[in-house]
Amino acid sequence: KGSQGPFIENYYNIPHISTGSMFREEIKKGTKLGKELKAILDKGQFVNDDLTNEMVRSRLLKEDARKGFLLDGYPRTVPQAEYLDNFLSEQGLKIDYAINLYADEDLLIKRVTGRRTCPKCGHIYNIYSDLKPKKMDVCDDCGTSLVKRADDTEEIIKERLVVYHNKTEPIIKYYKDKGLIVDVDGSLTAEGTFLEFLKLIGEKKWSQLSQKKNLRSCVRPAEWSPSLVNT
Image 1 (cartoon, rainbow, N blue to C red):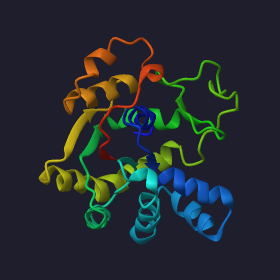
Image 2 (tube, one colour; image 1 turned 30 degrees about the vertical axis):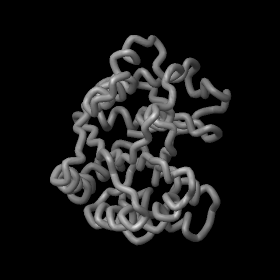
Image 3 (cartoon, one colour; image 1 turned 90 degrees about the vertical axis):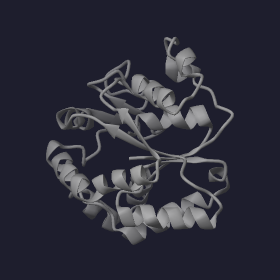
C-alpha cells in the first residue's frame, strides 16, 4: 500500500498521511513516546487506538488536509474507523473511498522483506518488484544509501498478518456496508495497481495514463481531490 501513496498523492495533489511514517519519525527523535512505539512495533503489534487517533486527528487539522487526503495504515480497527467518521463529520468532511488492496500472503511476505527505504527523501523501493532501484541499495532520487526497516522480517510480518485478520479485516465490512470499498488487485505492478484503482472509480484519464512508459514521471494533479483510506 505504501507504494501507491506517491501515485495517489501526486495525481490528486493531496497529502499522503502514513501513521507508520509518523510513528517512525517519533522513534527517530528518541522521545519517551518514540521508545514506547518502538517496543510495540518491533513485536509486530498495533499501537493503541487512543494514541493513534490523536496523532491522526492532529495531522488532519492541518490546512493541507482540508481539500482531501490519503490515509495509509489508518484506521486499522473498527473503533478507529468510528472515531474517524465522527471527527470528519465534526469538520464537515467525509471519506470518499476505502481502498482494499488484496494479494496472496506469500507475495505480501516477499514484498515486505524486499522493501527498502531512503532515509533522506522517504522514497520506497522493492528489490523483488518493478520498484527496484537502478543501482542496488542506492536511492535513484538523492543517491542516499537505502535501508531495510528492522521490523521487515518474515517472523514479524506473519505476526502482523495474524493481527490483521483479527482486528483489521472487520473494517472491510464496515466500509462495504457504507458503500465506500474499492477492491483493487494488489498483486499487479505498482503502476498497474494504481491504474486499476483509477479505472474502478471511473477516472476518465486512466486509459490515457496506461499508454505512458513511465507513469511516475507523468502523473499530474487531477482537478478533484478526494479523501481516501488505504487499508
